Length: 328
Image (cartoon, rainbow, N blue to C red; front, side):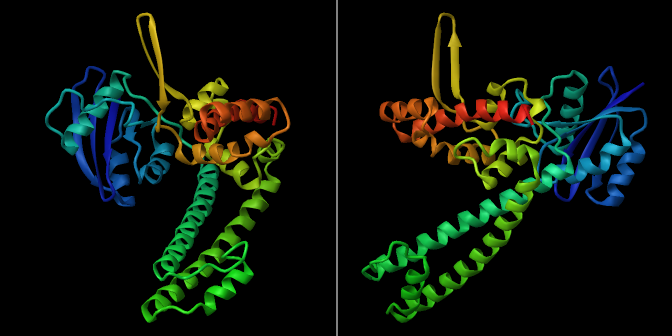
């Protein structure tokens, strides 16, 4: 009889439980999350039909090793699969049992298993985005330090341009403030260098990617945002419509419908955060477009405000991205 296996995965170990088609437990055990531990687990996977594992930090490393050896692997979305509802106790053993039983009853919601190439693109784009955020925080700290010292800003357009950096190197501060300024400037220089390296690699890959080239004509999308969108989406064919893509990105409002009433609330925060960030960044250029989308975006910004308008424009961008990508 075929078995269904639930895996409660952690950084250093995982708990596994196998049940048959009737829901009877066949075996359960705990294994270390190492190559030897995974080999021991796979040796127990006799007559297995599907292995289910919740999405977490070490999931991809675990699944990559299991996929070639079992008929199917289901990566469970923990936010949309209610495994613990109605239960008081929660342990690793119970989680594995409930996951296996939910898999048997086909009551789990799975997520996309991206290929290695897509995950590598995501790592690059997210690395570059994280560096930019660090750079912004460093610049904010420098501004705050100058404000605390009561220093009057120089007449330069950019404090972190060439003239501004020369002024920062020579500005008179107290001993401790000067020490802090020197450290912040050194960190900023280092981060700037890493950002430049990452951006050159992003632009090189974007120049060779046919999907990114299809997205570049869309106003607001350049090589960096184009490659980020391409990496975060992975495969456009997994979305039946552009509305599904917008929902995945988390740029659609909540809907509460009951009887004859239907209320639309704020935009939910669930979704792909990096994809939502890329769409919002591209939407900033929406009101500047010289087409019907731009005219609509300008009216919307006047009526709803810039922040709400950007979210609506990002949702509309999903239509353009979906159409352009399907043509690639």
